[in-house]
Image (cartoon, rainbow, N blue to C red):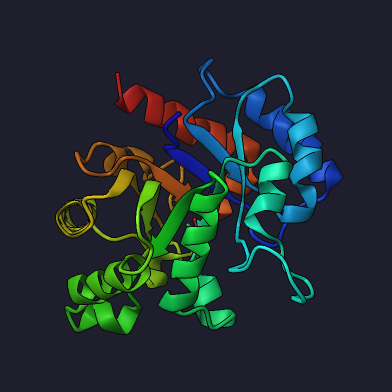
Length: 250
Ligand code: PEP
């Protein structure tokens, strides 16, 4: 299984939403292989969503996990709990978690280890701010985030990295696809050269991906897929993006 298109539903959803999304998605998706697709609903709805998409092997994951396995940590959800519900991946270190919940590289590293210990594929998010981008500090910032998260993580049998410029998330702005391609090339080089024991599966792009801009991104050699927020809430649009992805890979 190789995850290529992952929906991040953030703090959205309901049981009714799950049903409606599935109708819209399945009536518009042209493919019959679901193994490259993933959905990260709010954790409370993981079980319900699994039931709704039961006959199709779309991967389900969480948007976050705790850095500990168990303990007095009110409100948290562990990697083993999401595994128990049938999740195969978890988003880790999303910029919203770094900014709103003060997640540090150290905490993110512990979450990566929790994921590994429970056979959950981590999708590690990295990305520069608008200011860092304007100051041409993108590569430096991303390298710091990669090294900060991975240097004490040990061996990770699988890892997906999502490059998500903070200024592109939910803003309708996207970087030039060629620039994203260069960033992804650098990310692959850094991980493969500095962390040879980490099994990097793919590097996804995230930030205002939609049906209209998807092809220009997917045509790039080093863009292996996408992490999609806003546009993924519409089952029909997510299906259209997945159709574009599949056509770009023929
Ligand atoms: C995200 O937050 O992971 C994301 C990619 O959001 P959006 O697609 O809405 O920019």
